[in-house]
Structure formats: structure tokens, C-alpha cells
Length: 535
Image (cartoon, rainbow, N blue to C red; front, side, top):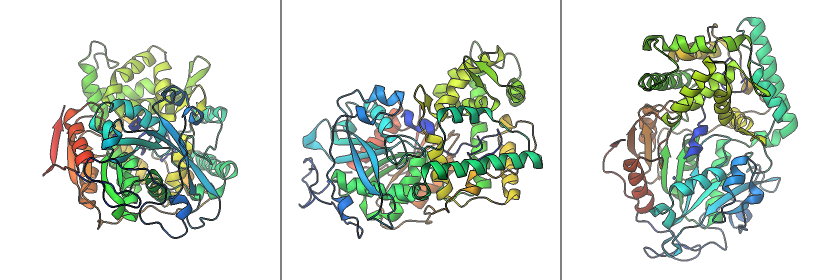
């Protein structure tokens, strides 16, 4: 856990890996013709579409070679999803370093589900499930099933991509092998004394050096969100779209913001679900997110107490924080054997956090905590494996990519006093995650990262951007509701609110949300005022 935002077991999880469990009367022009008549098909390109930045014509004008998706599978989930012959896959070539387009290149994996009605095709809908470090190809393969038979499936090619360094894309960011990752998950250090801090920082320093050695500094230096957004503009042209139509979940909203700042004139429509603040500082971001997870934990406790069986038993609600830590406390001394593996204190915490992303996982979390009380850690370990993206093939590399992106997007925090204050504020905001130790001043891997940050953009307001739709959930544990309202203000967009307890909601079974989003993406029809949806 040393390479995430926190150095101790009190975790602040900034990314939204659960986003991948989940999706205008404008017309798109031909690459060399005038506007396509209303309802007419949008043709595929033979040359670059739209403005091309200097030196990038060969990338913008490339022809994609679509074929079967099986060779692109890298995980158990991929192998299952990519058997569907309705999906087509291709590689997109982009510069590794946009400042040197004649140099080394990267190849990004793309997956497409062609529109069901080609004669009414509006273009491509690019979907980003979040992360960073999450495969967009697998996410869109699942997403396509969720919107099968809808206007989206009929009118759009549904497109997902593996960002640079992730999944089927090459070069891939992988710093540790499966055995090393498993060992790291058992290597917990809760000691916040000077000696404990020194050990944690030495581990983080070694991890950063290992990434530089195994991945390469040139790859790490160009892994950031700004470059992912540039890749999306190359993708837009290669797909034949004069304007980008985009749906982004969680971290995908940060990619959207970066794209909007760099290419505002190339946007047709954007939906941002579970928006993250691109300008948040460490202390305030952790405190805000800690409060979100505490709110989700308390909602889970209330739900649990209404069930026939609850891990709390007859214990009163106000003791839930204490009871949770008491249940996990033995794991601080020794990990619990689970078959050939072990459940650590950190993994039990991570498994809980993973389940708090959505109320759909609450029954499984309750089962896991009941099991832990009986000496069975299998369910919590399985939940932690979901977070880490570990399957029978090993790890996807998502955590390494997550760290690489964060370390170049944001300036490193090198002041131990700031780190300690962030830890203190997080424990205060999320007491159910307080492991009983004093706040830590241990700096994370980004403080020792081998390349400097390139930065992500963050203008206060944007000009030249068409109206966008921001979706925010009142009980979102990872992306506070207030952040959605602020992002909507910055982008001069409309806010669609959902009253519920989950991280992201679009095309996850809430008709009010799905109908509003579909009207916008297909017909560019936005609500006249901010709207609240309830289940």
C-alpha cells in the first residue's frame, strides 16, 4: 500500500476502479464534405478529420485496421468478454512524447461495438470508465451489453480504449510481478515513529527506482492525463469524428476536463459522472474523501442493521466504528491464512473500501465481515483482489499505472508536516478507518519519483466549450457531491443530481438518469435547470 496516497493502512483511495462496472440534434460532417443531413450516416475517414496540430498529420490520418478482439485480452475478464464477435478491436499509434512526434511511439488498444443502425449513425461515443489504470476496452465491452437495444446502441459506435501504459496498450506500465505484488500486500507497516517512517520511505524510494528500471523514464514521463487527452483527439480523428462525444466516469472526468481545456472546439457532447476536482490540494482532498467514505460506511451500517444477519450483531450503531476496527485488529499482528494466500489488515481495509463504492456490494461486505469474525477471510480477500485487479493471470498493472499517472499529474508532497496533517485530517474525517496509530509523516512514492511532474490543467472557467452534463450523486463516497456542482460551474454545464449511495450512476439501472443522459448524447437536449433523480 506504500505507493498509494497514504503510507499507512488508513487508505484514501482517489481512483474509482468500480467505475468499470458500468455510457443534441447535431450532425457530424464527413472528412471532406459538408454537414451530414439529419439522420444520415457518418462515414469513416480516409484522411485526418478536423484541425491537426503541427507535426502530427500521420497520426491523425492513420487508418485503423479492425479485427477480432481475442488477441487483445490480458485478463480473465477480457477473455470472457472478447469472445463476442460483435466487438472489433484495433491498435492506434500515438507519439510517446508529443514534443517529439518523430521519436518513439505508443500503441493503444481500441474496442468498438458498431452502431446497430448504420443509416442513423451519429458517430462514436467514447467511454472512459475511470482509473487511472483501468481498461476502457473491457469496460466498454460490458457497457455495450448494458445499453443494448437503446438509442445509444442504435445511433453510436461504442468505443473504449486502454490508455497509454494500461491493458493491451504498449509499452505497458508494470513495476512488480505477481509474486512481488502479493508480498507487498502483506508488507504492512503501521509504525509511525521516526524509525517506522524511515522504513516506509525507503520502501517507497525503492519502488520508484524499480519502476524507472523496469518501465523506463521516458514512458513514466509521458503517462499523464494531459497526454491521454491528446491521445483522445488523435483517436477522434482516426475514428472519423469531427467532434468528440464522450462519457467519462470518475477519473474519466479529469480526462474530460483536460481535453476540454486543450480542444474545446472539438467537443460535441460530454457527460461527466462522479466528477473529481482537478485542482484539489492533498489535505482538503483527503479530508473530503474521508468524509465521503465515512458517510458510506454509516449508510452501510444502517442497511446492515435492518438485515436478518449483520456483522454488528446486537451492538449499538454508535459503536460501529470501534467494532469494525476491533474486528480487524488481530490482522495487525498476523495475517489470516486463506487457502495458499493470506488476508492482511491492509487487504481487509481495502476490501471494505472497495465494497463501499456502491450499495450493490453491501451484502457481500456484510458476508465478508461475518466471515472474518468466524476466522474466514476469503470474501474480504476477494473484494481486495477486485480493487487490485488480481485474477488467475496475476495483476493487471492497474496500481502501477495509477501511481505513474498521479505522480506526473500532481506536484509531489515533500513536506512531512503536510503529509502528517493530511493523515490527521483523514483519520478525523473517517474514524472507522483509524487504525489506532498516530498520524504518519511518511512521504509516498511520488516524493521520490524518477521524473518530474508534467502537470494537469485546471483553468477556473473554459471558453468555447458547448454545454456539458455533469452527474453527481449525493452519497458518493469517492467523489463528493459538492465537487460535481463546482465542476458544472467551471464547465458552464448543467448538473444532474442523483440521491443515492454509490460512486457513479449513469447506465446502472436508474431510468431518470439514463433517460436524461441519452437525450443529451443523442439529441443534445439538456435539462433547462438542475435536476434531481431518486431511485
